[in-house]
Length: 237
Length: 176
Image (cartoon, rainbow over all chains, first blue to last red; front, top):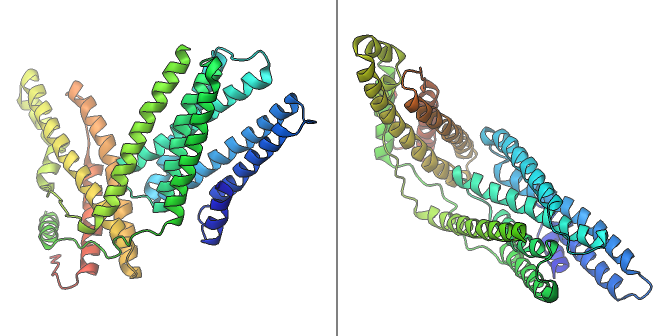
């Protein structure tokens, strides 16, 4: 589904504005397919399966950070007056989140004796914590400055946010040894969330937008008169 | 498990906040067609008087210390009200400018881009100015200057007037 979305987005010309999203869509689908094949192939050992899982997870995490940077650039990039402040703040927020996530991982109660498995769960928790915090920051920063998002940026960010928040919750439970005998519930929730996010992206990227305002909002005459009056007073000072 | 509970609650709270912000964002986009510009005028001269250091010095010399602190706090509160109004006006102008950016006319788009940038800077400066005012409320004897906010406000007014003239050339704009 995600791979199809990547292809359709590519065909719709989104590759110029959202190259990282399209790369993420293709890579994420490829990783899921690879993991499925690795899981059912008898000659791939459990250890090698978890090694593949680790590799995919690391590259996926990196791609998500690049994707968040792309969303940030699309929203604030054309406004030099806030882009520098935004970059500084998002760097500070990112560093703080990473530090908190590392501390969280260090103090987590391991859910498995094999470090490859418990480490993968902790890495998931770390990635989703950082991702969730960065997306929340972008939403709050844009809201404070009342900047409007493009439809595609909003959809991609919303899907990522839903994915990050739900997965943070589920992987936090898994990484800390919760629901050990009912892990299938977490798997169902993760899968349902994944599909919901793909549907959100499909809606925002593929369904045509109803024609929004294209005409300029005129400044009312009375406000212009007020400004004129104030300016005249300033000039007469 | 305590850490897991903390993270689950944090994730749920973040999700609620993000969903609310996303809904507001969608509504903002839809409502932009009927955007009622509600800019509240600011008396710039009165604002300048409030931030005038000479007036503060005069009051400091003429009033007993206790009375001066009380008057200074009143002036700071009035200044904060002006700055909050300027911040709200900046938010409205950002939306007006963004709506104008979508028009095909390159001159309007350029003026709108300038307006949005100036309004964003004004909004950023008002936040810093408000923080300084609240600090000054705790120490009324400290000196405080908010001139940069006023200057920025005047610059935004200029950008808004330029955009207004381009959008509606029939409206007479008297500069002298």
